[in-house]
Image 1 (cartoon, rainbow, N blue to C red):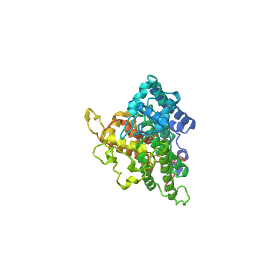
Image 2 (cartoon, rainbow, N blue to C red; image 1 turned 90 degrees about the vertical axis):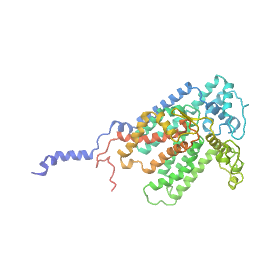
Image 3 (tube, helix red, strand yellow; image 1 turned 135 degrees about the vertical axis):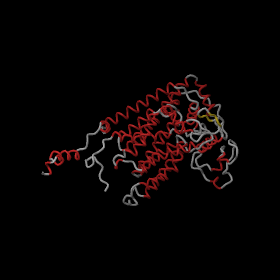
Length: 475
């Protein structure tokens, strides 16, 4: 029998085989929609609009938290007097933004309760004075102050979309991350407030995204943008001070995991000397923006000229006792390239950790000090089960559906994405003097949502080997 007369070798069978090989299977509905720019743009706009609507409505319904009166009074004092003593434990960016519409609307001021000294925290009593001075109208002033801060959360959602889309090479990944951000109860709870946690989560994520983009394609323009975002993140919360040490380490690790490329010339933006200069310039720009946000208030004050109150900085046994362990040593002569109130705020925050007047509570137990697993437990009980299952699915997806090689994220990409979240979690959990408020680990959420974008691979059309959509051979 002629080979072509057999069922497997018939001309029809041969034709069928060629058709299967040369023509990839039709795209699924998700793939088709995510390749349409108009659909993706509309989806992003609708998700952010829904997020903004939820935040704006919540801002009108919920009474001010314990911290917000002090935050608003502090923000107003920054604009009115150019001073940054009030609420120094947090950088001033968010409360200065919150104060802008209140300045425009007008308010009654009462600054008589201000006092200053080592470890002073008059912001709480001054917040109460602000409420008394403005009466019922203070509720409206808090509302417009909250509305002014909503863009911080919207920007965080946008960074979630951009990083997940670029990392997993699929618009659907960005939409997954954005959806998780827009409807996460913890993000919604803090995004409506004038406190710093949501803004720190958003701008910290943005700094990480721009740093990752620079790692992927070094250049002076990208270095400038990441330096600017680094500085803005510093102005939200001192937690991100860790990035000044973390980024150089991640840069070294990323270079280690990247495949070797042809050597660049010394003038190339991607050459080793150029990358070193760009990274140094970005870090210096971040430091510059941080000082600019404080109007250079006390920048380059010598270390020995500070009066600290935490045992870490005083070297004394009792927290709250003024002192300076560097006063009689050579490091004391070093000018500190940080705003004076910023460093004093770090010291005061550390003192609060060392000598917190209230016990910690977990699962029916009160005690002095804390638990190393407090924030892990908090995430377990205060994060929706759907989000938890999404994270589990993302981990499984990473190993079970690797996707096309040219679209897969490498080990270096995963390090850059997940290390900041892990570092924040470890640093906060290590403060065992007390445990309060899940908001201290809120920055973990943004990086987690970007990681969850990998689940889009379950909706991707898998290419047939040898087809035009199949990944090229690596041999």
